Length: 194
Image 1: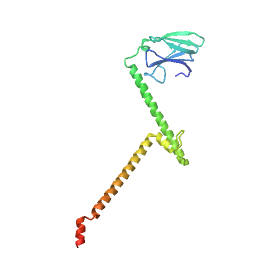
Image 2: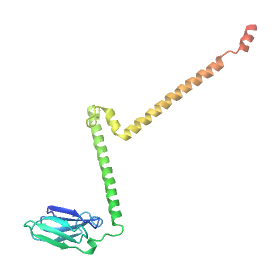
Image 3: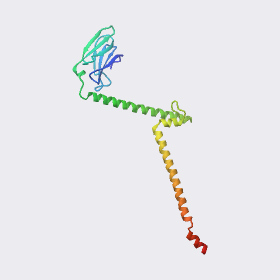
Image 4: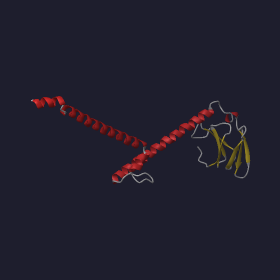
């Protein structure tokens, strides 16, 4: 790939996977993101001076006007393959953008989790309470992290369940002790006569 500066870019109005770029070396590049993402699908030398702008024909997408540094406009005609959309092209491009958006969100979340872990460990070594940006304490950090919040809620429920069972156990013991230690009227009468 060329290291020349890109001066202008425009999506094809007729093909959702194609866009065009002009560069300082006078070339017009055609990019098809379904075919290649790292380099142009086609690169053509339009003039021997820097190209500064381009415009693609809105209706058919067949003609591209490229403007150079000295004011010359060159009209380039592209083949039918570059201006006729395939049946599933729009769906494929939309799917690719959705996947890349999800991927970017996952990578961002991983990066944020790593930063938080580094911050926690660094602050733990210093004996400080972890804080979030603009936050004032540990509770702010835990509220920001859904895993920490879920874990905290889990242990809270477990503790409440333990207390409930302990109360029930004590109540059952008291009830059992009351039943075995309670003297019935018949026993009182029998004990009194003897």
